[in-house]
Image (cartoon, one colour):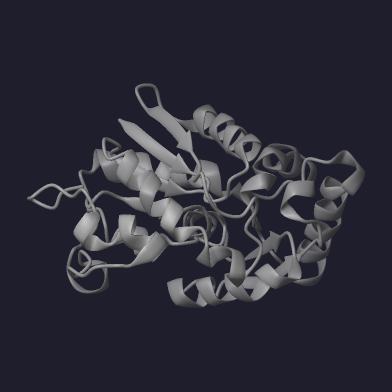
Length: 252
C-alpha cells in the first residue's frame, strides 16, 4: 500500500516532520511518500493563503498517481473537495480525520489551533461535516505555524494552558490539535492531561489504510464528479481539465 501525504505549503522541513509522524503509525507493508508543492506560501494561515495552494496540490496528486490514497496535511483541509474530484482514490484531510477519531473516543472535544484567523475556517469545517454539535470550542494560542518548533515561542506551554482551560471551562473530554505542525506534541500532552489528544497526521494514516483495505473509492456522483472539460488560460493552463493526464477509464 502506498500513501501519498501532501503538505500544501512549501516548507520542506515541515513536510519532513510530517513524514516522520506518519511513518510511526503506518502499518508494516505501508509505504509513505511525502511531498509539497514547489509554488505557494511557506505556511497556510487563513483564507488568502489557501487559494494559492490548490493548483500545487493538484499537480502533486497528478505527479503521484501511483498512490493508493492521498492525505492533505493542512488542518484547514485546504483543497480537499477539489482534490476529490480528480481521483477516485480515497483523499483525506487531517482536520476531518481528526474530528472523526475524536468522535470515536469522547462525547465532546475542543480544537486548539495556531492563530485566531484559523478559528472561523475550522468552525465552518466542523459545521459542514456535522461535528459542531460535539465540538465545544475552537480556540487559538496565537503562535504562527512556522514558530511552533521555535522554543522561544513557548508554543508548547501556550498549548498546555489552553488544554487546561478547555478541560476546566469547556468540559472538553478530548483535545484535537489543530495544526499539522503540532503533531509532535500529542503524545507528551496526552500523558500530562490524561485525556485523548488527537493529531491529524496519525488519524489520517489510520483511516486511509482502512479505506484502502476495504477497497473503497471516492464517489463520482454529485459534487465529486470529475471536472467538466474546459480550458484554463495563462498560468493555470497546466491544471485545466483538458491538460490533466487522466486514464481513459478515469481511475486516477
